[in-house]
Image (cartoon, rainbow, N blue to C red; front, side, top):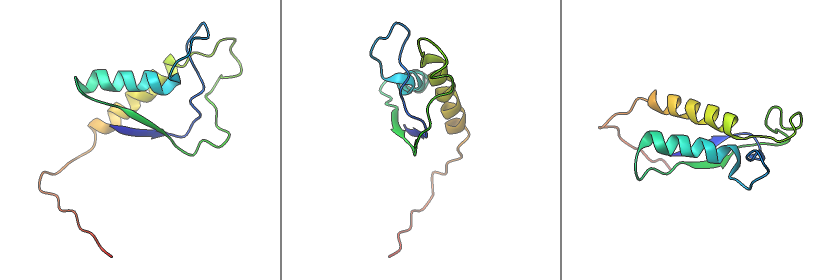
Length: 93
């Protein structure tokens, strides 16, 4: 699954450990929900100067709550996508 979110992935784990930030937590939630062999790949959207809420207002930013919220929303959206088995793909030049 490829998903994107317009926010800098700069929040880690409590204690200052190196992590994949909130996208790592989101990807883990998605991969666990989608099952063995699934890969969730985060692509940063147009972040500009957009940092996570509360990033500067807490002593130790924790990316897990934001990552879990993002992962849950991506999963909810993915489950709502309607697909067709007989859809045609047309290319135009």
